[in-house]
Image (cartoon, rainbow, N blue to C red):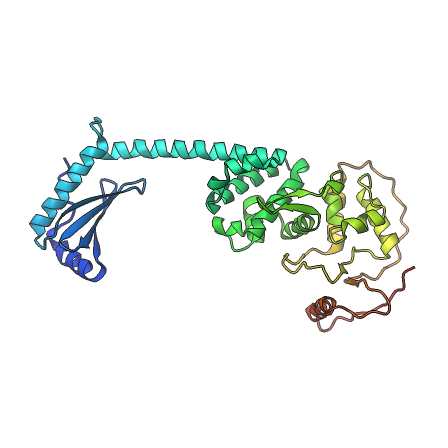
Length: 367
């Protein structure tokens, strides 16, 4: 039996003071790996014992202000609890708690694996029955954030074929602010610190998930719209500000290389960069701003797409004629007024530009 006292006579004054002012006092925060707290209840004291697994136990005895009596009561109650806790094993209290901690850790890991497998099956098959079986477990945001964090790490390891799923996982993390559960202030810091994903890439992927993903409102997870299943994420990043209908109208198909895609967009829309089509029912204000320069985006897309496209012969050294870069496109018809949404968006755009930058407003009649 330990000769170390749970608390000493010199501590009695502070214990009585805390009991009067707070109703409870900590007797020892690490006695045999346990925290012992004394709580006052009318004519009795409650001894609350918290073990190293954060499990709490209670013992009661008569209230007293005498140190010797109080220490005796506390020591006796703790000894009784200790015997019951050990349950006749030839081990010390610390050894039993260590065993229980290891068993609890193993059980938690098994539960995590079981629910993670169910979540994976739901993601692979779309069968909501799998998600229902693990719904209670993932109602805890810490469990859900850990699972999605693990999923994203797994997908990053298979980066070449899993960018879509990574983008959709990040969109769920963004929508539900799960990055906060992992100690991050925003989605950009989370993606950068955890996976090394650049800010611009995160913004582009969120836009792809928002524009081309289909949200399951029951589970909060996204999947790619069936009409775009044969496109790569590189292609969809390039057309991320178009609607699916506009993609179909422009004749954009999955077999196009990034170079062909850019040429088609330039030919059809007469711009180097893909402009934003603003309609009354369009609302992208909840998404983070895209910090990427469009030309840098094209260079990155060419590099990513290079391994999938056959090398093309040089088109010669003839320089392209400079083309003015379109920053914003508003689509509307003659004989009508701008909607309130378009006016607000246009004002927001104009005020966001540097004061010394000259802007040109051009009206183009399309056939």
